[in-house]
Amino acid sequence: MTQLRVAQKGTKRSLRARNDVLVLQSVAAGGGEIARADIVRETGLPSATVSAIVGNLIDRRLVRESGHGDSRGGKPRVLLELDREHHRFVGVHVGRGRVTASLLTLSGRPEQTVRLPHLVGDDTLTVTANAVRRLADSFDGQLSGIGVAVPGIVSGDGVIREAINYGWRMVPLGEELSERCGDTPVHVVNDANAVALSEVALSRQWAVTVVLLWIGTGVGAGIVLDGRLYEGPEFRSGEIGHIDAGVSTRCRCGLVGCLETVASMPGLLGDASEQVVAAYLGGADDADSRALDERIRRGARELARLASMFAASLDITEFVVGGPIVASPIGPPLLRATNEVLELRAMPGFPVVSLRFSTLGSHSVVVGAAAHAMRQEFGVMLTMPGETTEQHPNRPPMPEVHRHG
Image (tube, rainbow, N blue to C red; front, side):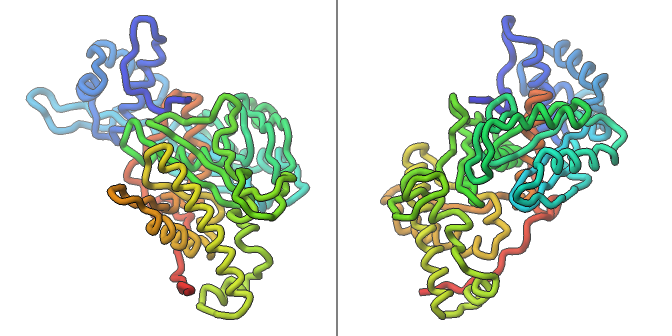
């Protein structure tokens, strides 16, 4: 498993880079309110070591002195913060219908966003490269890395091993995109893992646990356990869309009964048009609305069953939901119906298991992709506690929904 935040000082045998990362992570988490002495207390590193590392990070323009804090018995403290002026990362989400790319600072603040159409049959590499180049051309500083979130099984070398719903197999996206973008380092990550990483970035905990359920064209999961991203030895962790849900529908993978057939966006919507969805949300009781309601409740039952199994296996009670479902009109009724089932299934003496939408909504994917690239390049996990949807206004308001009996 990949440890996302370093919480212990290095030993004599460990690389100097480990302590560099520990100091940089402390500055990132400090939010501009941390001084060298605070880092010494937090990390246990010698004062001289911390001073030397901070000096090196300042020279690399990763950290800067931001002013003076209150005195704690001696000279006023010199505060440190991430240098937001020099380095930038690009986070990219390759989705069905469009490619979204954002230019982000080291603190995770998005400065510009580009959206380009991405239709079936388009050259994904070309569309993605065009989006990245538009952002790179607008910035005079150092583009330190590119993070790309994609569906499917992604290996550590940036190869998309397989994405069934997109027809991709052994696509070397990372290497080829880097060549088209001036050899800038490119790091590819599964889209569900990217959203899970965005939730880690928003947490102050060093050993946070997040289970992210991705609902879009397919169904997947991103799993962070005690501060470590779990991908599995073959990078197949979270490929839950093709587990047996006990239904009779044939899946695109060729099997019968896959979870995706009832819990993905296509499985939930079926043949419902926008007009049918609008009527359903307005409380209509015609045949089409009842059929949509039944599909949503069927999907909710299977998602609740899945969450219950995760909860019992991993001892967690809150799950995060991400992907296109967050911005979909049927997202709120699906979430509500799933939580209703989970409440009924609560065991005596145990807390109720529940689902919530990802904190940053549709922007979670690009933030998580950038966080992945930053982790790979600098060894430090993006830390942005206190961020809200006001700073990342890409999540639409959730409509009121009529509850069908």
